[in-house]
Image (cartoon, rainbow, N blue to C red; front, side, top):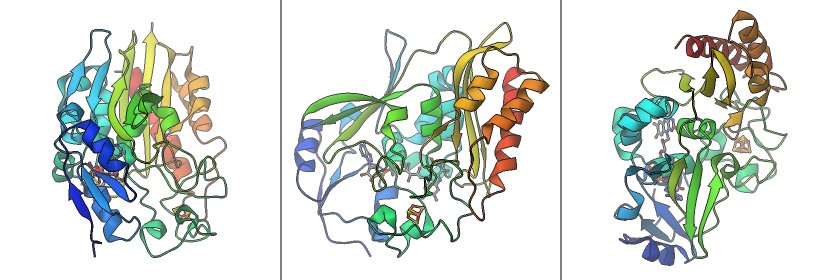
Length: 326
Ligand SMILES: Cc1cc2nc3c(=O)[nH]c(=O)nc-3n(C[C@H](O)[C@H](O)[C@H](O)COP(=O)(O)OP(=O)(O)OC[C@H]3O[C@@H](n4cnc5c(N)ncnc54)[C@H](O)[C@@H]3O)c2cc1C
Ligand code: SF4
């Protein structure tokens, strides 16, 4: 059951920030994740601040310096269908097109997507685990088939649930955050927090701060990008394993770029081991086989998620060969 709360729908960012300064205030964008967390008793709320009427948070704009600015209220469907994103940042269009179902993509926002809470069933259930301030991680020796193989650190084994976040980290995107103290820009690979940084917080937002927009830099020369996601149900589901590639090519060789894994770790997981193997190389069978070894280097599977090792090896091989031939 939902708790009782006040509901306000300001039309300016300034008013929203003012409302958010009161104790127990929470941001409501598309509401899909927030209402589910309230119903499950994972979060409480005194005042719900809907940001849905704030025009400054809407729309996708290309700037003269070549960067692309995506307002936090842009729906995931709009992101997946935008012609600039499809042609210049295909990894993001592909990741967005694989989020949830068509109905949900029309409702949920990119800001809410990167800020969603973890979907660990113990966390969403009636378990006072580490992430809720308790002493124990129930997944560590429990039902952990969908949990992480990197970065749990003996603390918390969630996987980061957002597909677009992996794509955005691969593209070197940043978020612009606004709050009572003004505005700040944080690279997306510093926005999400690992359990070792803070086991009860998923990102760097302070109380009262709003993600205003996501900024993607101009695509570098020779950029090719793609997103691959493996899930249990093809209709809609979170990633068992995913890989976001944003690689620069010159004369068939990889000259730079990023490889980011989904379904692997509590944050979008940059695989520097794979980046090192492929940079300066043609993606031939030998290099791709080395990349498959590298992608699982340092992985620490739990009791029930060892299948992720061959899965990540397989998808990195297939995706690298596909992007080389694109
Ligand atoms: C059945 C189902 C399947 C799903 N499958 C996938 C999937 O495959 N891939 C995937 O990536 N996601 C998936 N999701 C998650 C879904 O994409 C998120 O729940 C959704 O994106 C949240 O967006 P929203 O606009 O509804 O956010 P809300 O529910 O409104 O907000 C989510 C959280 O973010 C905060 N917030 C919202 N906007 C801002 C902002 N601008 N600044 C600061 N904080 C903010 C809210 O306070 C809240 O804590 C799935 C969800 C469901 C229910
Ligand atoms: S994985 Fe994290 S969220 Fe899940 S039970 Fe363990 S501490 Fe809680």
